[in-house]
Length: 85
Image (cartoon, rainbow, N blue to C red; front, side):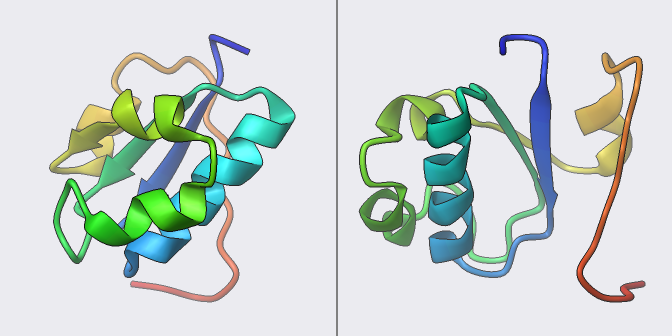
């Protein structure tokens, strides 16, 4: 799944990023993008929860804003568990 991207916007914990990377590995998604991670990047807490998805973490791209992260994407679907600003 080389042409699919998962974009996390302002993730709050390194563990959240690592968990997403692990799920991506299970589903054969390879491209993770992060917009403004709260705790910075790289983050030490990511690797312990990524559990075997080190290749995804190593290739993760970090962006300053959503526009930059989506610049080369033709179709974009967004979701959130709760209302955010």
